[in-house]
Length: 346
Ligand code: GDD
Ligand code: MG
Image (tube, rainbow, N blue to C red; front, side, top):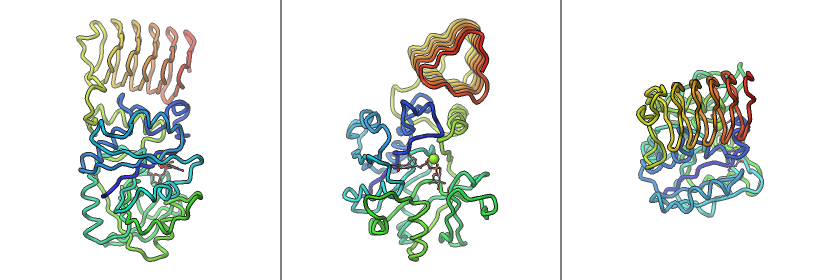
């Protein structure tokens, strides 16, 4: 049976302080824990067996998804005491793997059709198939060079400026034949990007690439995390179909407040008259007072924003208090329980 292993053990350092209490795989995207988006992607492809490969704060993730039966799936877990790297994590799951396996980075928001990738992998009788995406700035990713027939020629993780020879990068989805796990040493740190792929190339295994034009975003930096929200609000990527997790802004619920059509407001919020919400996502149970302006921002549950405060292009964690007339500027991130003094500007 084909299984999908989701690599979800990274620490999410680039999203700190948001990931201090919330591991990156379950940071809310439009008020829905991120892994739901990937699980939906798996479900849509008709696949039902998932392995979640965890290391950082695994309990929080396990509690949310359990054995998967409530979603009509089977979810199993592997937990690394010490992170083993992307390929080391797959090696750890070897006893759960007996067939073609899909491996996904656990921080990619995409509507890529996995079934098409698997079909293409089988058609070419590939040992490994990697999905590629053309991007503007390959330096932040793994650069992948191919020939005209889609054979992978070179893999350079986080290339330097003078190493950038093309614009196609590793989109963080692979299909692997189980026999290839023999190239990954057990019980030690090993990376797909820096060790496994170069080895596969050296061994002349059948290593193919498929370039996708699906929506694709790595949510792992503050800028991209915000971008994911803007893209959802602009309808570039759909919300997963798990009922009851989000609510579109209904102006009528908050009479006297000005909420634009794109904003998403979770349940149990109080938004006072004269508050203005533009192109933003507000988590459950937030309280937003008179005269507040929230623009292009994401606010996690339980936060209170006092009168006339202004938030513009920022990320606000859980249970924060933004004081009266405080101004929070573009790109600022407030960790959970931050308290911002009245009239301050940051
Ligand atoms: N279980 C486990 N153990 N998971 C891990 C580990 C580990 O030791 N290290 C990283 N991960 C998970 C992360 O949680 C994340 O979901 C995924 O593996 C990729 O790690 P990132 O830290 O987000 O890597 P990146 O974004 O810098 O680069 C990777 O993704 C790019 C696409 O976004 C590479 O695969 C690049 O080649 C690729 O282009
Ligand atoms: Mg990433």
